[in-house]
Length: 258
Image 1 (cartoon, rainbow, N blue to C red):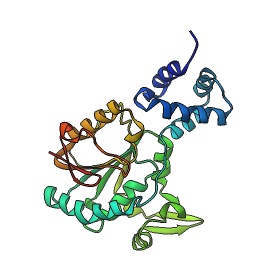
Image 2 (image 1 turned 45 degrees about the vertical axis):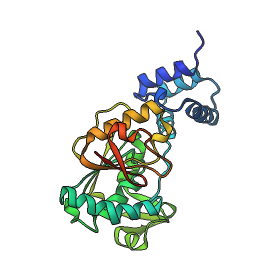
Image 3 (image 1 turned 60 degrees about the vertical axis):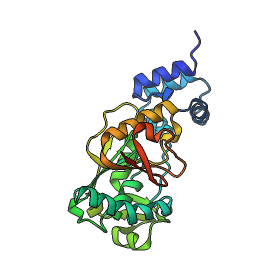
Image 4 (image 1 turned 180 degrees about the vertical axis):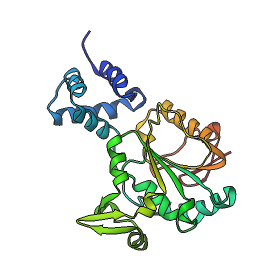
């Protein structure tokens, strides 16, 4: 039997615990074939065997697969709603100890944005943001906290001046904000979810999953959240079966657990 994309998906799952069958197939297969060609491979079996022997090649595959596109204060209007409406709501609903999970956090822009906005309403020592991603390389990048200026173009100047220090061609995030964010490796499609969260922020990620996988993620998010907790999704996303899963839309891209 010829080694094909189905065989490749099975072997990748055994090697990385990433289930490619839960991603939209045409889109993901096209992305992988593009990466293979750039790396000089034309056959799935040769590419897989090479990744088994070369950790750097495997890590580049995982990083490319997870589509790490992020920036501080991405979609500013949504962050304005987060600050003006969601933070006061969470504070009223749950008090001064707010648990927020930034799921699939990529290079850390999102959880650091959350921490900086929370700092306007809570003492820094009361802020804890759990930030997770499947890609160990982007987690290491996020923990280092050094960013090029282009990643910070949308960030309000007062936040840039308060929480960053100019360093070389970029900016280093200050330690007092770094301490507010805990980074961990986590696979949304396989790993156990945290519990007792008051808000989950997961933006522009599940659009790459199959409809079945999306429903599974949203259902687990629902279980993770406390009653009346909030889910904040991306600008290109919509929860089609929100009511069936147990969510109610309260604002564009914000859903409450009911």
